Length: 164
Image 1 (cartoon, helix red, strand yellow):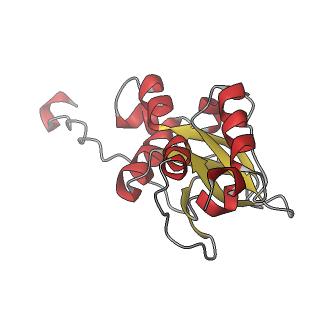
Image 2 (cartoon, rainbow, N blue to C red):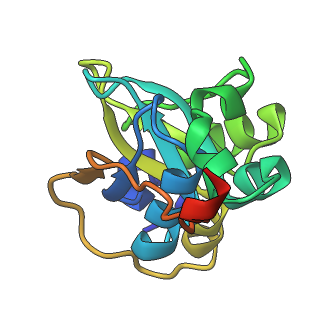
Image 3 (cartoon, helix red, strand yellow):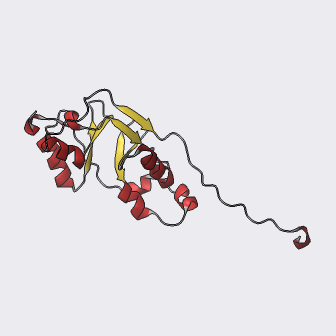
């Protein structure tokens, strides 16, 4: 297949790990680590994309320890920046142009219903240009972060009875 005739649907990743905007950066990091992904779409309850976090976004924001990271929300990491996206039938040159014009290395693929259907990364674009086959398309599988990690902090020292 020629890259000029390929579409976003032909190359997009369909197995996705996502996170809700009210989850913590600690949760986002853990989801990325366990899922083996470099990009994490932030989706609302209706699976509409609010933005996409990268490992670099989380790492550059990291300060303090697990307790501080579990008190924040990933929505603050999005910082109101635009989230360019493409349709499943967008030709690959348009997908690449959206990435270059926006200075991003990932674009969500949004279906006609407004829901997330996949992600196209710069690696997916390079794979297409190189003529490498991607796994055959199928239904999108999505794992949404529906649980919360709470840090386990050491107990505070108890006061001895003679100190009371």
